[in-house]
Image (cartoon, rainbow, N blue to C red; front, side, top):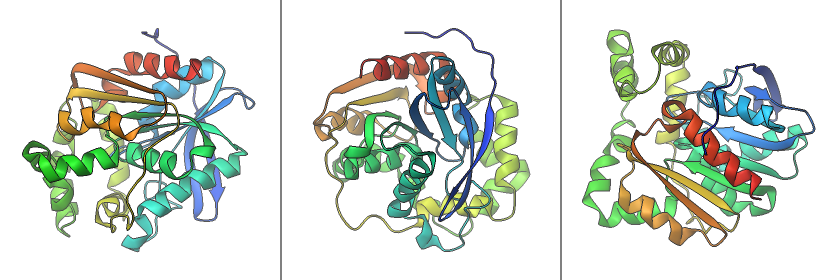
Length: 284
């Protein structure tokens, strides 16, 4: 289900919460069906700009926040403040401030991991779940224990906990960060991500998502209607965890596989992904 090109008209919001105010982009009528979209590393809410505007034009109220560490007013210095409990808490705090008792949740990369945990622990708050790239954490954990390919793919998660990571990523005009996007994301958008991450403390805050302690308990299965989109050229997540994700969803489940598409699905094939999300939402 493809979606025609859309004229980008974006609102900019500041959403106050007990942790601080989250910057966000938004589109759609105030009384539209609410959709919250969560970005990953090393991006920002604008990675969802196309999806937010199409959803808004279709009558949804779509909002994508710059998450913890990416919003300047929510950038705590302690690594412990970037654990999964805090990240899930931000999702609920944002929804509460917006007056959303139930909402549709969409996530990519780290935003996908947060979305899985939110759905597993607070299914009563979600109408649907849509996750791009990131497999269910339970499926990923199983793959890490049995699949050498996934172990190699995930080595970066351990490497980035080293204190020298910021210096290496920002050296030579952020060359390492630029290479990460595999030339699949527009140059001007990558420039904007680097500009933001070069702000004092910003990259450290983003990397603290990797450095924070892992959850003490195991994640459960997800009961809400779920769409999972995985691309065959994803360098971070292999097929073992992707195909295993179905075993961790007890609700209605749709798995979509994109051939010859990289990890950066929302920006590489925005029309295709938005069509999949719309079909999932309109079916519930």
